[in-house]
Image 1: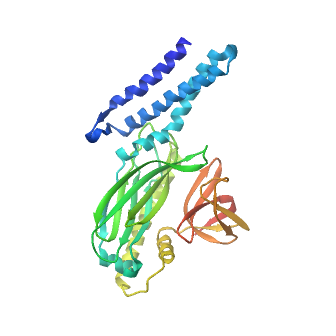
Image 2: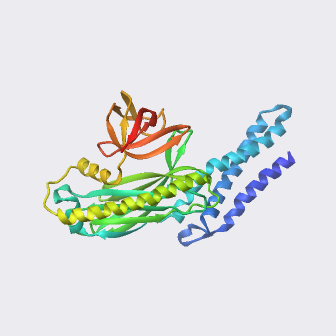
Length: 356
């Protein structure tokens, strides 16, 4: 039992010792020397509590093996707590090391001609494109977030816009994606088109797994958001594939931007206002070329990629939806799709097929 106490004490001392990598900044906020120091402190803290809980449970299994079970429980609890706790630790450190930077790329009049905006539409907020390159990254590297969006208002006057990045992880116990951290930047801008970028530092001590990064813009009560998967892995084949796909996306984006620029200069004429669903469909067509085609006679569209998740809609055979993302959870593949009202849903890959 003395050895068990020493093990738990050692874990706790490491947890508290890591806070030495932090300093107190203006306003009493903790400032960390690096992402890995911040995440390590939060994760090892989880290991300490996991060890204590594991030891207690092991000891309570009773009998002559109580001491043995307590020691085993401390080790298992510590490892499990650290592994599961990484995502929450990253969430706690997310805002300290992930920032959004943006710049205006087109003014009010130019954007108005490009999208056919009319004052009767009121405030319009729309994310045109959003990628994380590469989508699979090794611990210690930095994927880059790239997004473009436009905000239009009836008058060409300054407005305050909030750009937010949110980290989401899949919780197998709750069977849904949950938010574990976010960072926001408020800017003052004139209506028009804007480009946002951010480097997402992945610490060397990162655990392998799948996450989602949500990008959201909001102003004057209007919001739009998109989310993309990010996989942390050491698999070299997966990393190489993600890099190839990233290069391909960059080439396609450049081609689309060139085509859009030519089209906007040749057809900058008066057009009737479009409905939000029509504008959304055009935006998706520009940024997403793949579609999910329903192959089952009837299929449930769910809120999260889980068979027990809430059903948000139903689909029939041969219906088509824009494909946003694909993830594999517990051995099952799911497609995230965009519905006609602009909302998103998930469908089992086995009930559908992907087509160009």
